[in-house]
Image 1 (cartoon, rainbow, N blue to C red):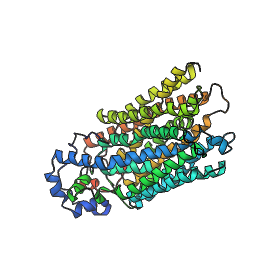
Image 2 (image 1 turned 120 degrees about the vertical axis):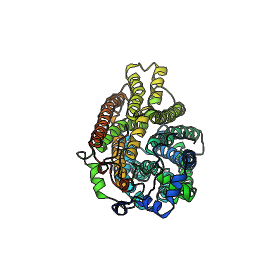
Image 3 (image 1 turned 45 degrees about the vertical axis):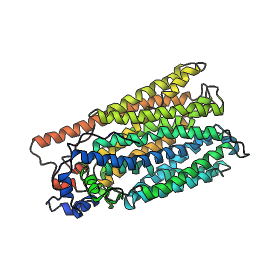
Image 4 (image 1 turned 90 degrees about the vertical axis):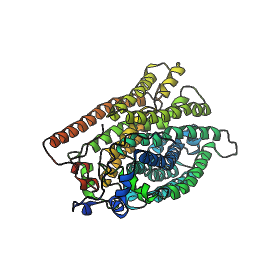
Length: 511
């Protein structure tokens, strides 16, 4: 996937990269050590703006397709239960009462339990290999899911699947931080996050096709088997071709590796540090020291209550309008395309407009609000209007992925960024766990309680996003005043030390 390259190279300083501050050698990260071992000074001094643009294009060509396909498969695989629900899965597994809602939520219990430990482990082990093994493992679990014959067996497999998939998005946020500048990250996040919609389209097409398979084996089982086989093969590819870091990327020359690290070093320290720093974990989790972690947790929790509700019951909602199972699967496919376009457009807009990431996030909640409102006020006989409302749902996901990019740009220190990302994904998991339980069995009209709860969550997100922006604005203003008063900021050694944003007075937050 081609991603537009930022023309702004003014932040790339062509200066020596080996500061003489004695504290440098004590705090330097892996990237800084690499720069000392190669002739990074001469590479940086002779590099032109076009050199850097060519480097970014090369990074995009290798990284974005891998991230995009992986994210699409993750979306398809975790949604297989939703596709299967319109077939005979409920009858075959003898599900009763809230058991289907539990199966939807149990995936996110696995996500909740394993996401932070696996994210920390990705810091200790080669990331490309680690991610590849996780993909292969969840592909195997998906295939095994076709053999489930009761609630208990399916429940165990859903938890394990969630545990393996929990690694992907947090590590992708960290990968963004390894290769791209703060300005570039939001668009790159949008580029691979748009696969969420692409995966929904492809998954819907596969489910529709499996609905026509007549082999004596239930169509929902083929959904799990086919998707599992594709995922396992892709995991093998990722294992060999997703680089661990810029310094170990075999598709880059030594000069390109040095420039890849050099271009993102300012205010973006701790590119890759194998040492877990517990003081950074404490800072990230303490709202009195840094409230952005708690605010991101609450924003994403509200966002994912929507996803957990409609994500699990989307095709069933359409079926409640009077369509058959296969028709519901087919009608649901365009929503994936809308989702993909909205996420990529939101990422592009957030990069294009200065200091507008949070404003874009709030703006993307508005269409979803309108779509939810239509589900409540329109009569059930107005099928066309209800479908328009369904197709207005997807933009809210843009808010999620813009918020997920914030730990990568508004936190410094490798462990702190990993912890903030995990904190945000705690909200992701809990929101998705809660969403399916907003459904009331036998409710008329169907899923009304879900739509009311989702509207409340939309409003809360807007308020919390406003509070987060106010915090960033005040922090930047406080640091600007300190600079004007004569405080020394942007010390050379800070550019290489694995320090947090709170420990660097020259750090400025992106709005």
